[in-house]
Image 1: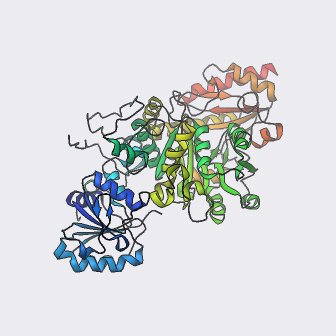
Image 2: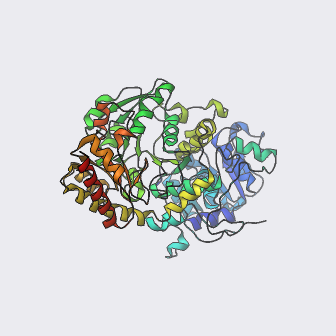
Image 3: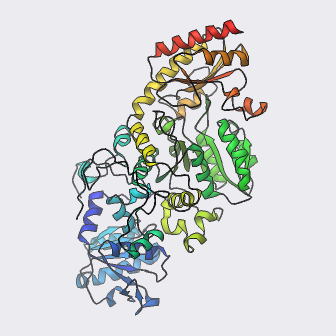
Length: 166
Length: 439
């Protein structure tokens, strides 16, 4: 299940550092769904996560109003995180490209197992940064040593002392 | 990112020696401590009730209680996972605990698994007898014959279990062929890599799915700490065939959480901590994790010398008039020599057996006559060790099992250490002379 797509640690760190708000497409109101785990974790790390789910528009998930589409979000946001299958990711990417300037979108992030090369190429042509087949929760945890707490191989070798904000 | 500096890019493929020193052990960020602190601590303070809930629900990473996870143990887990090329590791109280933990994730009552007839005797007893109390049934098969393994498969078979290099020695498993059988059957191949260590053999490179270790042996090397580890490759899809409900179906003990769906390639290691260690309780102590981490820092250097010394000792013994045979895959005479060259190109380990012409009595006498080699039941120490399996570690086995395990009455097991090799040979020479005068 290891992906052939490779992203440098520095590149992913920069994305996670510069992003403050995330529109999560496919966010679930059920607490034990993977999207809910990711949303709650990212909220704890200080990100604003705006849930997108047409079936639950107008309701709230983890304290945030659910919208039916990216265009419906009244505020600007930095990233679109796609919790849908690879095929469904195509139209979502096109929607993001259409509203990218208006909403300030800079990054399209497709979740683990979600790979849509054609959509990625369209997004990159529109000036957006694309990450596929990764989870921002796992990558945040990996790059900040939290994944290591669970005994996982972060792949990070460094003798640098990480800065801790107190 | 267009920089050519691999450190800046962060994706450099570091060598084994670099990883055995650095993987899992970045400087401690709060104090800057360079060596990994021993977190001799049971429990961890929650920020608030919501943080506690997130931790108990597995929604966030962090520590709750050291039965599940501990920072020092986690450092060793990551290091071993890294050295094996796996996704994650779970350390536990012993190598036997690692075996229970690995099977606990896979097995339901009534399930079966295939295990090699040539496993370490202690494993044969645990898998064949104690596992029955969980209603897990071992089918022991001569894994030198992959067709026999295929014939032994049943719809209830959930795993194939072998040692890469078998204890007490000389037997090398054909991992690639066995992985192919496991793949056809859609079950994982579990490999005990204790005798080889990831320096000599990396089972994941040959298609294995899970690796288990007794970290007590070469990984620690210092004879201080009993411990075990289960390393998961992250490659097996536990949900696909519907055979592994503990990993690929809703878990009632976690409000219906599905580990495979929620954690993907991290499912096994999450489950091994959150369910396995939580409920089996066979946790590794932080002090033991620390001492084992110290051992791994010198693993490659020790394994090179272990292998070189062992080969020289094996060659000496093979030419000795009182020795009937030597079973060591490093020797050209070994039937496993070709497999050793394929799977253990840097050396065939340092544990091997010899048969004495004088039989059981000569075995006992030789062991007792050693002055430099320690007579004890362990392997993989920096000290050279000697044992007569039939009268000690393997005495629970019957005669057929003893023969299959290569531990008959005339057999002596050696674990060659790092002393001056001429001194090891001299001690064995005088012990053999003493054994000859006794028979």
